[in-house]
Amino acid sequence: MASVSNKWAVVGGGMMGLTLAWRLANAGKSVHLFEASDALGGLASPWQLGDLTWDRHYHVTLLSDLNTRRIVGELGLEAGMNWVTTKTGFAANGKLVSMSNAIEYLMLPGMNYVDKARIAATIIIGSKVQNWRELEQIPVKDWLVRYSGNAAFEKLWRPLLEAKLGDLWKESSAAFIWATIQRLYAARRTGLKREMFGYVPGGYARIVERFAECLKDKGVTVSTSTPVESISGRSGSPVVQTAKGTLEFDRVILTTTPRQVQRMCPELTESERSAFSNVKYQGVVCASMLLEKPLADYYLTYLTDDWVPFTAVVEMSAFVDKAEFGGRSLVYLPKYALQDDPVFAISDAELQRTYESALARLYPSFSSNRVLAFQVSRVKEVFPVPRLGYSSQLPPIVTSIPGVLAISSAHIVNGTLNVNDTLAVAERAAKSLLINDGKRVFLD
Image (cartoon, rainbow, N blue to C red):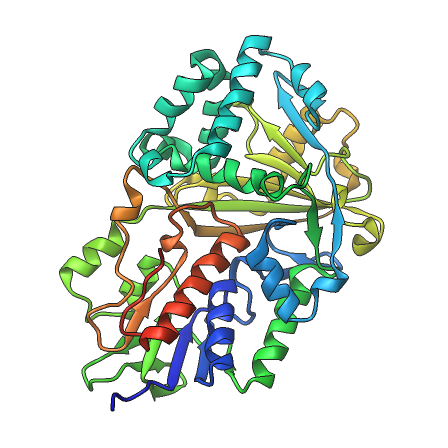
């Protein structure tokens, strides 16, 4: 009779690692979760901004985000979620206007009605495409120009692609735009007339706190402030080395980025290292700003002017009840960039001066005197760039090191980086892991 692996380690306490640990524990496995930082949550972790505790990065749950809602429900928090509709802004040529409905869309400056009609048609066409693998072979520009035209591409699509992907947009496939459209249209496919946005009171601080409580109740050992130094399989079973000691397991699942997997696993083959190195990650410098008064009433404002030093304006207090923030306004100003971008070396103080100057141009009523707190999160590896043929270039899940597996955001092949798509990978992986006892993993 084949032996069953019951001692599992999960490395990485982000939402993917937490979900995998939860699924394994519920299946009766003995689970040890390792997290290098002093807090769980990963990109969804909270932090302190002035006297406010809230998400370090901006997050939103859509009504159609069933993976997120399932987990939040299992944690006993879904019944308390607040669901709202939001408004969207659009800034071009120094002008800020609303883009919250079809009529406002038609009134957008800088484009004629033909361009706007073709953009709308592009989005509708994208919402109906089923075979994302075909789009993976088409450069994103080629696909967008085919349906939207050159003028609309240069005025809208190119600035948005550059803001999110930098120069790597030239290497990306049409599947990137498809995934974005699919998520936004998911509610309409289920019969809802419009998407609604939701949040748990207390933000992800409450979700992560409750996750930790539930894992503890299931007997999961959680070790924070415990970076894994190395993982070896020479003994036939994976051995995890940390500064606090050495532990042996039947299976080890790494949920960290490919670069971190290479660092922790010196016994990987050269071909495996090459596959892990092939994944290009985009990073982010995300400023959080606590204000006395709101900038506008838009949750998300798209920016197309190249002089703006950040990617978008995300005003969380236009979405979340201001009572959560003590009646104040919470704004995120993200700037997506590659790891070697000079923006990562710019101090908080210098970024604050630059960002406040840009906000004053966008919002004439803005004053730096309104700023109560300003803090910057810098993460050099946030999401993999969906290059042409990306699904055929994925790093291995089951490695050559006995009992060691690597599952991460690098395996999001038909979505975008958000909590729901991250959990989708975790759920599919957990199901396959438990069926195959960690020997084979299928994500399709």
